[in-house]
Length: 360
Length: 126
Image (tube, rainbow over all chains, first blue to last red; front, side, top):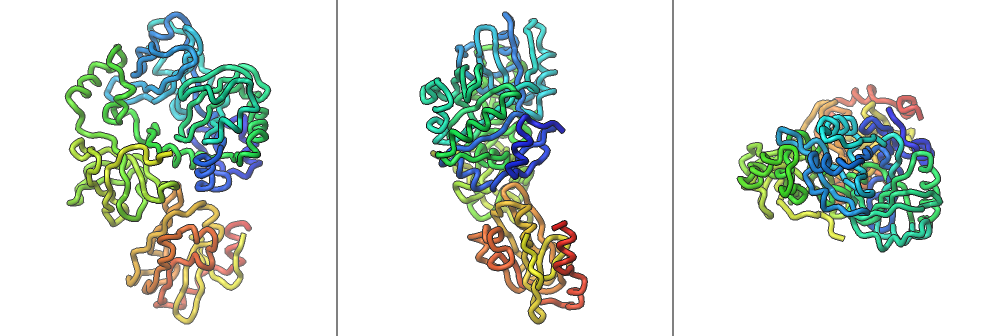
């Protein structure tokens, strides 16, 4: 199992460590609910160094990215990032990712830890255009500093005006005494903040200075468990749960990042799906009664017949009720549709709702 | 780790308090601490008569769902309904307000098969 540059620090802080995607990762420190609230109301820090980073360079970099990803990367300007996904040849998704345009002919792709090797091989297999590829995953650490107080708490660490970095934009510069840091206004929580990319050797210094700067703002370390409840309250897809090799971006509600203004892997088939409609869709639902939906539970109709499955579910710390995502037949995907979640012996009524669950 | 000497314990990290033929049952301090924030306790077996080792309910933390096993055979006569609205009580007071069920035992000799506080302490390496 791999460690991040900060594993010892997490253990010293008393984190509960779990294996995740081949890495020894902190799942919680003080408690999931308090960590969740810290990000919603103040500022919290996640070590998400397990994420993968690929640099794609050279005059054919954009051509390769356009070919493997669904969003239109030609729209990116330097200093902007874009959420995208990589479709496979069979209608499913290889991974979802963020693409950063670092400079002309140089892009950084950030992928899920569990898919680093699969993604690398996949992109390489499509690289008949001759783009240069470098896998930086083992060299870079990633800290997500998230929450409404993130800007104020971190401003003393950099000469860049953090409040001026727009959502899905980034700057490269000094942060916590280190140069060439990517300061990205992105995240997976819905509470604002930054993702900070640094070399492994600099991770400890940045972590320490971030906690020093955030002390007066109630900053806390946050584990992967709260990362999951935070992202689920926003309805952000998690690869391996809500999207995978068998779900299409159209079914998953990722039509907004699937641009048919260009050709990409399997784009003809996906375009046909978009035009003709799909038979199932990923929906967000809230339970009408007490209970907690979990990944893998059946979604059933009023007669108890299985019509789909829950892909993510939890007790929402903010709403205090059971929330989830799952695939249902398209005719039951409209807002306010009534479905049921089979929880052990009971089919608990649930309602299809609009995302996000959490509204700031 | 709090392990009251007067209670009996199970390998499933439950505690048992015997009063006459009625057993009060909950989960241990160790169990609640391992589970983390408890968000749901479901017991739908009240008025049912179950054998020891059968599942009487479910406790859910944010990331986990765990079955609750009945330590002693008998009729489940009460569920601590306060846990429906305040499941976190199991975290804050596992041996007190966080109790889960009361069972009218059908075979009190089974009590001898439960663990003492010392045995339980050894089990969890406390």
